[in-house]
Length: 150
Image (cartoon, rainbow, N blue to C red):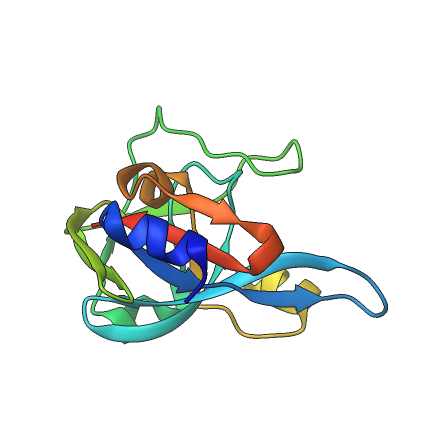
């Protein structure tokens, strides 16, 4: 256990391994984490620029999630200028990342096939800043870890 791990453990944090997603001959371009939504395992992209945690709409059933239409005044946008087709989970979810866990997570659902295609892998969703803020996250890119406050 590193000095940093010991420091954060004393402060009540849980260390989470970040799995680098590499492009040929380069530094990591993204990081993946393993998490459980409603007790079911999944692989998620860590996205510090995403305001909300998103599930791939096609995988909602895997996590026991039912969707409902968003209010017309809610608009989601991504890196492009186009608005995104996003739905909301009918009920709040439970999330667990290692020993860190929270109830009452508002999840959003969208088609992530374009992301899966681009990354050439199957993601279950995206962990956004809503989780990072709730967990008072500290991301240590140099050592490939994230720390979440219990």
